[in-house]
Image 1 (cartoon, one colour):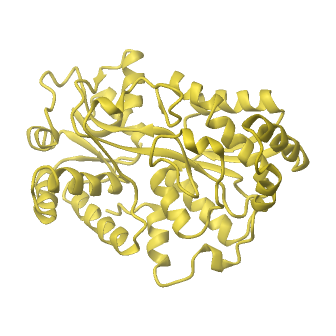
Image 2 (image 1 turned 90 degrees about the vertical axis):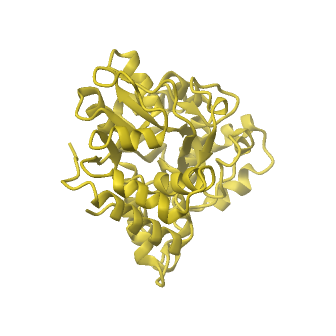
Length: 363
């Protein structure tokens, strides 16, 4: 069972070899844009970026894995406000990041702006596939959610959740879920960073276990587990009763499904809550950097309101989401930039999932 994401595999293959910048990737011209907007107020910046965006052709290639019913309203709002045509490529986060990397290495006119989780952004930045990001809005983001190359759009929190038709006494903690619901829980195939953080931040730091003991604890609990590809599919399968418990379904997906009448629940929230970010980045080969920056600023302002309407937790602290992360014990996670650590934990997670037996559920 191969649990290493496409992007992680790309990073591992890059160990000891050239990075994206060595492959002849060209610049995006983003520094020229920054020179023209330096020192401007946010309003003046928007006006100048729109002028530059029109000169770039009035269109943008946007890669995002969000469901059409969530992405389309945001795209339509941006198009209506600025008159910019958005071409949207949809795929899973790991596919998007791999596509971005391939385009950069081939110097291909592809994505101008992409959206994926923070883990993929870490890998792409490590491979020098992303252009530097500068926006005054970074100061308004959740601490730790902005890097030199990515900006968080919203927070995602994988939480233990369950089917209310099948579970009357829900899990009290992760240990309870792993033991009492052995053979009845789901775990996501690409969640290696989540697993690494759970081992280090919870089992080692809070429970006093060694890493080896924590990993074995997971392995011993995996027999019969449902290994699923994709968090959206996890929520669907939990709703249908394919499994009783999900170890890491996204809170916003569970709350949205519950609001629509699905027999799923995630409250009381099992603590501590791991969290990471869905982030945006601009590839170094982007042909429309001003348009990309204009769209990014839109996502960090007007888009934040729309994320709240979609039950997501915005990264901009000026907008309040429904899930109050600060009310719970929590810890952040993302994919390590350290190549040796990435290789180590990719192998460990692959081995843990292999203990489940059976095939990965992909649809």
